[in-house]
Length: 171
Image 1 (tube, rainbow, N blue to C red):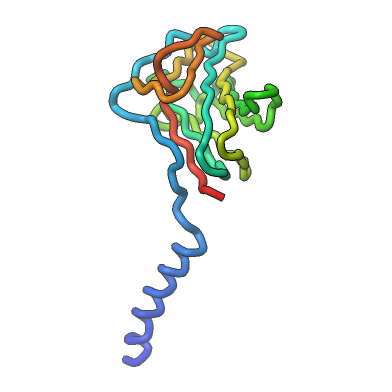
Image 2 (image 1 turned 90 degrees about the horizontal axis):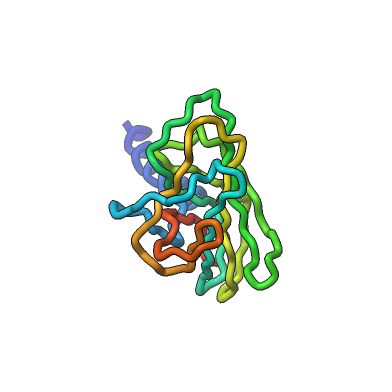
């Protein structure tokens, strides 16, 4: 009986310790909503891209980007890849690149995991999305009605933002 009484507090303390050691990812930026519109650019056409210029007001470490796409369904055998690149705006220096297969999207969201991407406060960065190895299915981004950042489709300024979530922490 004594062991049973000691077991409950031990489990409780273990769960709190687990949450401390493995904290939930916090959202640094979120523009995914119910008010999205589709991009006019099929990312799987040659040379197509969508870019967004952004900055943070604190130093951040980014662990993951989630970008929302249209309702296209890619079969498991499809070889299309989506590429996310992060550039420093002032000198166009590529600082990070990551790719994910289009057929790995869940609920039309592509997940780009980064390995501790550190970005400095008050510094402008560009996220560039493109895709390649397209087969027969078009790939359109979802855009939010917000206009917090400069967003470009194939070099033309548009009045929407990428529909995305950025996970990480302030450092």
